[in-house]
Every structure is written in structure tokens, then in C-alpha cells.
Image (cartoon, rainbow over all chains, first blue to last red; front, side, top):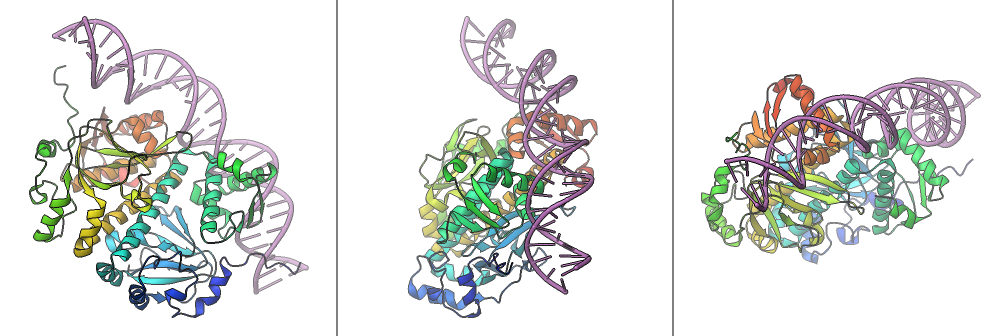
Length: 249
Length: 249
DNA sequence: CGACCGATTGATCTCAGTCAAAGGTTGTGG
DNA sequence: CCACAACCTTTGACTGAGATCAATCGGTCG
């Protein structure tokens, strides 16, 4: 068993450029998915100037937590993250997963402090968008302001869909909805919609969906028996998309 | 039983001005809670010009639904609303309740179409904010843009908290969290934090919290037996705030 | 190699859902 | 103004989906 290296970091190609900290947005592989979309060339260079390309984060490393002071929004550059919020007694809810091109920390704008914890699921990197500068810039770049509102609104939409899952779906429907939403996001990023790596643990998935780990595990096995998908460790392959779509509630 | 009129519309005083459709924001009773907060006087008058004060909505009347075309955001002027989203098979999730000064429809900005249905819980009225105009104005009024982002972010925050409730709390904790969050919102609006009317039905509450109606009903009875609150029809009075806070998870 | 952590599978238990019936409230039309 | 109908809420009895407890397996790393 020497060909073990099956769990490669997500978006490996992108990870490779992470050392070029000053890589301009225009040359970034994420260009089409990221903030700059639709911005004019000279506006883009203004943004380029305020963006800080951060060094990498290791698996399980914290990006921010409620005690951190809010100064920036983050865009995932490579890898993936989860955010969690905590109840008073320490129980945690995984509220979202974030992939390249997605914004983290937007719920901190109100009250100017993070209310969640963001944690890397694998070796990852981000761009930092200092919020004050962003505010300043968007006063003169309407399209930037537009982008920000759209991002916020998009996250709102996906949270509402998750509310529907948590509130009204049974365990199988929850898991299938989750798998299909991952599939779509990978596909939007130019990766296979049919076969991909789950960068999060079964525990993260279970928590996110309001289920027990054991339930998630059993459901995956069950869906595999029914020839709807193949799950081997972290590698997931969708076999029967139509049936899955019809069972996601 | 002639003194039956106990369920007065929420924010009755505000409802009375609803006929003055052209009432300027500056004179509006909601001034301190609403969009204009922090805006300069002359900016405010610009906004005044694009706002349309709508006529009233009756109980159960639809404000918008997914088939409506997205043109405006709404601010509740008087009364209250709920929004719901639907699964493919018709199951519905009540995603939020909205009270005076709160924005409805922000999840529609992304994709420029409503994905939820908004429905009046009682006789209510709204102000309409044409989104295109709002975008135009906020290019020249940074503080307006700021307000919009903050509103979006605030809704995001409260959705994340609801995710925590739905995902990790038991039935009693869900209901108590809900009651306390209502209490706080009423208090922010200058009403009693201790005693208020539930404008939504038991069914709406149950649906919102991912519970059965019967469970909500039983829990209210149980909390009443334990002298933590009094619930008579739609009227709720909090008796023991500290204990409730400590049991909300 | 052995230890540890994560995932799987099985057995049992429990919280909240469902079903059922009765009691209240609201609204309508005569 | 009253009577009836429709709907909402409450309460009780039973059930079941998924949690919890427990044991095993497997991969990874020192």
C-alpha cells in the first residue's frame, strides 16, 4: 500500500500558487469565481492594492473566532473551511463549509465582531479584504458594492435552504441535499460534479445536518447498497443523479 | 364576554398613520429603528423620494412569492409578516418573522428573484424600497450602503442562530430561545420585554422551530405549570427571565 | 509494530411525532 | 345579537426515526 496519497488537498493546482502572495487578481485562477468579476480593469487594480494574500493555514488551524477583532472579510483561495457557532454550554453547530472563491465572515459586519469560528479543513489559503478599505472603495466602485450585496444575499439564500433541510427533511433527504449541493458547487468551480473528495469529516457532516455520526455513516452505506453512489473514505462518486435528485425532498 | 378585543394589531399606534402614505421618514415613528438611521437630512430626503408607502395588507395576504418579479425590498411599517420557503413536494419552512423596522426580501438580491413567500400575520403595512434606486442612491450615500450591508449581515446572524437552535437544541430549548428572541426584539422597539402578543399561530411557531404543533402546545403548558411564564391564547407574559435564560441552551 | 483516531455496524432506548378526541375561539350569516 | 361552522389549541395514548451505547474494523503516524 504505497499509493496511499488519495486524499489530496482540494484544488491542488490553486494551492500551488499560494506562495505568490502578490499575485494580481487578474492572473488568479479564481478570477472568474471571485470578487473581481465584472469589475473594470482599473477598479480591479485598486482592489488589488488593498487585498492581502495570506500565508497558508494548516488543517484544523483557526482563521478567526469570536474573540478575534473584526477587521477583514476572507475569500478562500485554496482548500476549504468550516464555520461553527457555539451555544452557551459549548455545543457547536457547523453552519457552513467554504470553498475557493467564497466569502467568509460576512455575518460579522453587523456588530463588527465575528460570532462564529472559522477553521481550515485541510491545507488552505485565503485572501484578506480589509473591511474598512472595502467600504471606502465601494463608495466609488458601484459594481463592487453590488458584488458585496450579492455575496451576502447568496449566503442568506443558502442558509435559508439549510433551514429547510434542518427543519423539514428526514435524515436521508438531508444527506442527499447536502451531497447534491456539494456536487453543484464543485461543478461551478470547474471540477467534476460526479466525483469529488469530501474534505470534511463524517462528524462535521453529521453536525452540520443535525444528525448523529452513526446515522450519516449508515445512510452512506445504504445509498451505496442501492447503487446511488459510491463512498470510499473521503472519495464520493455519484452514480444515479436523477434518483438522488428525486429523493432530496 | 364583550371585552373580547384582546388581540389588537401589533404596533397599533403605527398602524394609525398608515394612511399618510407620503409621511416623510423624518416624521415616521419608526425613524430610530429604520433605514434612515445615521443618514444626513438631505440624504434622507433623497430616500424619501424613492420610497413608496404601500397600502395595508390584511391577515394572510401575500406580500410576494417566488413567482413575483423582484423589484423592491420591503420594510415593515406596522404589523408583522412571516416568510416561508418550500421544498419540491410542498413542505414549507417558516424561515423568519418580521416586525416594524425590519427588512424583508434581502435574500432575493442574489438572482434577482424572491425565493420565499412573505405573508402578513395580521393587518400590516410596509414601505417599498425599489432596489435599483436604492443601488443608485447608495453609490452617492456611503452611509446608506453601510446600512444595507449591516441589515443583510444582521439577518445572516439571526439565521445562523436559528441553525444552532434547529440543529442542536431540544424542543424546550428551541421554544425558550424563540420566546427570548421575540422578547428582545419587542424591547428594542420600545415595547415590554415581559409581556407581548404572539402574532403568529402555534402552527407557525412549531413549523419555524422544526416541531409539531402539539409539542409547542405541551411545552407552553409545561412552562406555565413551572411558573416560568403565562400563556393565554396569544398573550405571553414572562415570569422568570433568569431561569428561562438558563434553560435556553 | 502498536496506538490512536475516525468510520462502520449492531442493539437498545428515548424524545418528539403522529393519531385521536375534546375544548375554545373566531368569524359569518341569518 | 345569536347560532353555527370552521378552525385553532390543548391533552392523552401510542409509535417510530434517529440518538445513544457498545464493539469492531481500518487507516495513519510516531
